[in-house]
Amino acid sequence: MRAMILAAGRGSRMRELTDVTPKPLLQVRGKPLIEYHLEQLKQAGIHEFVINTGWLGEKIEAALGNGKRWNARIQYSHEGWPALETGGGIHKALPLLGEDPFLVVNGDVYIECEWKNWTRRGLARGDLAHLVLVPNPPHNIKGDFGLVSSRIYDAGAQYTFSGISILDPALFDDCKPGSFKLAPLIRKAAANGHATGELFNGQWSDVGTPERLKLLEARRKK
Image 1 (cartoon, rainbow, N blue to C red):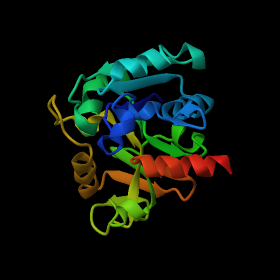
Image 2: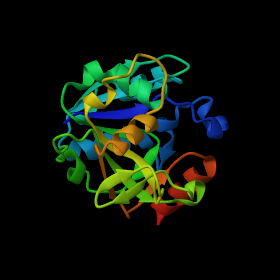
Image 3: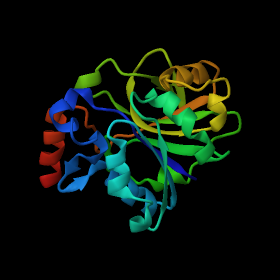
């Protein structure tokens, strides 16, 4: 399985920090967030990575290089600025991701998990997406999706999308190049019975504000 790390956004709510540093390169205990993903996914058996870039993308490629440091291969899908949103960015990178299902993770989340549970997972015949959900955090109390018997539902948003998913390239079959979000594609797949999910109750953080970054740093020091 290949993995795509989404790293093109600006992080407008963290402007004082992200004006000069792309959000995935913000550090927690001296290490950029995106490097936690690379290290842990490599340990879980992934050797092929695709990273999309937009805001200050040249800094991401300069920091990570071609992946040799992790004995892995990193390819870049450069979008320029403004970037192409989540769906448009993945769609542009499909030629680099191959024909099989691939793992996607937001470059600005932090999670402590057993990645092998997902890197060794495929999709059942006919399914187009598998989402990892988390309990609704204070900043997203209304949630994103419902989950019943391992199936994703648009109604009854019990849980929040963690930013981690396994997607089939066929999810994007009807898409055209350009900027668009991923969520409507997931909702359509869910409405047609083609999206599964699971709940993760471990340590997870969406590092979307300076305050959340400070809280994560404080927890990591304990």
